[in-house]
Length: 320
Image (cartoon, rainbow, N blue to C red; front, top):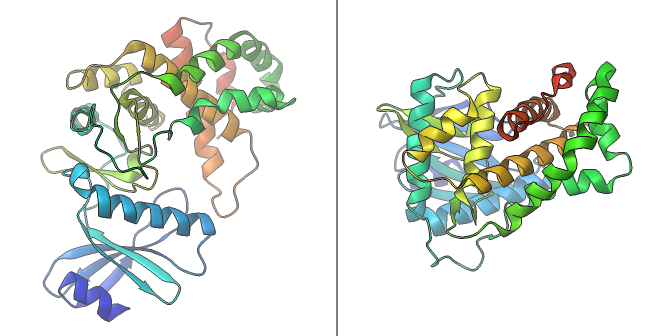
């Protein structure tokens, strides 16, 4: 396999260093080459979960077939290798992480380039049939799934521990509206754009000149750009960055946002985290539920502020 990798990269490998990050451990390495370049080796093997193997196949297809639509934001795709149980993608190394912490300068630069990314494909219709058109559905049905479970709201309220009764009262009052709003995301009107659908600090870099680069593309879908925006900016706030509304305003300097689609997206993202945060820990990914609880707290606070609702003080009792 090493010879195949070196042939694709056009240089010998001097050494490889494991790259850590993300919610689940993956076989990702930074390769240092004899010609002083670096590259990323991202792979799965027999020890990887079926889910990880499947999404790497999806990601490779995105790089292979949508590459020109992803530039200049995505890393360059050099090729892939299959050897024994290994499936490996070879990608441009976009460098070390800069965020968190999120400064105003980094967040504003990210919003500028995120708007440019969405603007570059807004309204396009010449997409391959295999590209998903319903990637936001998983998020739009979050509250529906909570409500369909006879103990769903109790589970969400229980995240607040000793303030569970207060939480349940707040949820009873506002979740019906959130569920209705979130459902509207499924019929969000055109124009749509190419969405990343997983933009957060561990899937991006902000390079010299404050240039946004995005990687990890397995969930790519068409949809309303406001959804990508809302999902991204709440994650910035979770990491003590600027307020979501500030980030939305910065983004809107480059691409107009539709307030009603932002509302639907926020309700949907909140429902997604409400449903996920109440679930048991994920095997092999112990950090995920903790992060989702933090995101639920941020989204509920933003909902109350944006919609002028009673402040959900009980969210302070949700423990990461």
